[in-house]
Image: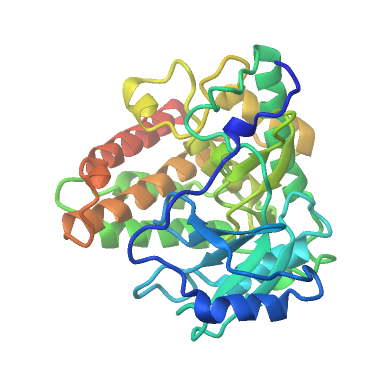
Length: 363
């Protein structure tokens, strides 16, 4: 692959979704005042675009003639206590930036909901490629480059897990010890609360997890949504990672559970049809490590001693089943009409089948 700039492949925002527009009348003066020391002469009205998604926090791009900013805010409507906490997300990244360079620079935060109707923060825009279901057409990586990208991605997760969270002033980020038990109990409760008539009870899997928790847990900063489509790649060298995005689920947790979460999304080239139909990152490409190779590489680089990774594999799949069921619950009860959610219940069956299959391997 040539090293020329892939301008056509750079991840871009699009038109703002109806009903999710930003009121610029108060926002623009606030930005000029709040950023006057960091970005002087921020004048005029910015062009506002929005990134796709919207199931979680809303993300906008504000384009000025000489500067581009990213604004993140919580979605409208009632939200669970502790969810979509913009202040926490802002402070976490600000504290992490000096010791983990993949984090974008935080610029300003406001909890004054009178400005745009919600708490929000503004950060640096990282310009680059985001590897979604497929790499951009103009970015053709050979097998060796794909492998390099894959290893760089795993290394960036390992680097996060090695951050000294106490020295970084992030001891308050989570409860720490007891994380494993809290996660199993929490996801069991969330699955049961969201259960509909057309999905399994999930009790076989949740009971197995509860009775097979490892004796030892390690505590570090965990991202909890670490996937290729949350990475930003250098536009001139797409094997190089320049940013890690979406920190809203980050906490103090167990690194092996964080890896298990990531591997639940990891679809290999020879996985079955159902897995392929849900793939959202380019882990199928020649040169990508298999899930087992990822585990071996991670353990070798970190020095963790794990006799059997099955607990973490099953946890990641069960957690993803819980997430999928929560989404389907909303569709089932007509809280959303998004047709993409219509058959999510079938995916829940599939994930729990994967869990049972993994459990039987070690039974």
